[in-house]
Image (cartoon, rainbow, N blue to C red; front, side, top):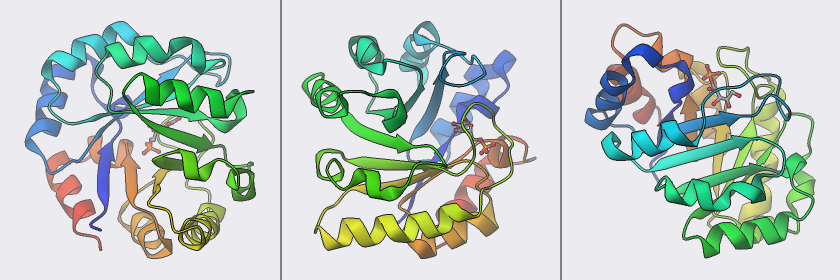
Amino acid sequence: MKQLIAPSLLAADFMNLQRDVEMINQSEADWLHLDIMDGVFVPNISFGFPILKGLKKICRKPMDVHLMIVEPHKFIREVAETGAYLMNVHYEACTHLHRTIAGIHEAGMKAGVTLNPHSPVSLLEDIVQDVEVVMLMSVNPGYGGQKFIEHTVEKTRQLREMIDRKGLNTLIEIDGGVNFETGKRLLDAGADVLVAGSFVFSAADPASVIKELKALK
Ligand SMILES: O=C(CO)[C@@H](O)[C@H](O)COP(=O)(O)O
């Protein structure tokens, strides 16, 4: 399968959101990645559901919503109402992860489970079969523009082995510090979806960076 590219809106120009979303619409991007933060699960606050509802009107790519919040199960309905394609929740934020995933599916969305850098892939043994996507954080969540955590390449290999061993189609998504160099190594290790924020939006020609990420493998 050709890799999917999901630019992260966190690195866009918030004073020119419509322009940047239009650039994504016209580009070869597969998904639009949207980071919701609550200042509790992560030490930062980004944007919330009113912004997502506005984006729904102009965004023509499937919306990949990454909830960096405590108790994400309380917001399944709100996320579904934004028209999101995928709702990603953190393993570390869910006491009853299996129930939360069932709720996401009942609301009509694909479900993703995300692991922080310190959480081992082995935690997923009894849940990987229930989600469409596993996302590995390759930076500590909360901020864009951070340095890629090298161990993520090994974790990607471990997760690929687990998914293949179980005969699943679960997608492996990687988020943080993605550029041409880290992206290539992640794809070689078995990643399917690359999230890229600052690398895309700080470029003079973001659409051509997306095109090159799409051509990495
Ligand atoms: O979830 C997050 C940050 O918490 C990411 O989605 C970032 O937005 C990725 O940014 P870059 O590392 O690509 O700048």
